[in-house]
Length: 374
Image (cartoon, rainbow, N blue to C red; front, side):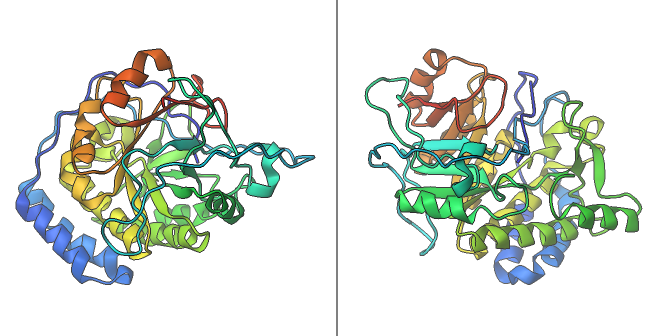
């Protein structure tokens, strides 16, 4: 649950083209191997990648887009007052993979990764938020909530929030950081211990000057880094399932776009595809849907593996067209802008059939401000 990643360069990465051999081997390996064996499967697939490495024209100065950090909250003195509840629309029904939730193309959403101490009964999540959309009219409620795996204390699973969200007819997506390692997570020591035991080959540069408390993960596998990461991500996904979440958001899955000067590691597009597809398989194996977070240069290649997309600031950086592949496949795009006014982007992204919202211009992801476009 990171706070904002901050400003980015406006230069967009060009879509990567991936060798059919790389894709076929990685996909087949994941499909034929049990979840417990995913790490070794991916390691085998990785040996094929370097011989057919795709190229991508990504700006080395581009930062990963914002994700949010948990904040310690004071103990609340009361629970929220419940307001009248309009029906949540667009929560969706499964269309493929029986038992896995697939949101409808038009699904209002809320992005709250920072706890509000007013809502202690639901882990700091305001499950009753209702806001007047930019298009006007009565207040509307989200049908999809994207919240952190943990409640406001940073250690308790967000089960209470998920249960309350379900009671209101909505669905919950579980936020996990899969590409950088945050030092405030309960499992952090396992990452540092592994890093020390393997020649400091896992934890790279600090994510940014603003967020030195997390470091870029090395998703290569020359010393088993990716195997270890997938083992740790599987444990996190298991917790998402235990808490009752319907879907998973894996954040910071675009190291290949950043370059060694930013991350400390050389990650090829082919390697990123292997890791991202393995993450999607982890969620699906636990009966949950999965979001592709950003990584716009690989949206076309990854759309078949993911059930919807989550994007930050594609309008501000003129990148939204890359997500048309999801909409054309009948899969929703959950989109958020921070610095851009709703009257600038809502008309355009609504026309694209995106589910767009405006959050705070300081990149915080508390329950409010919250303005859906429609």
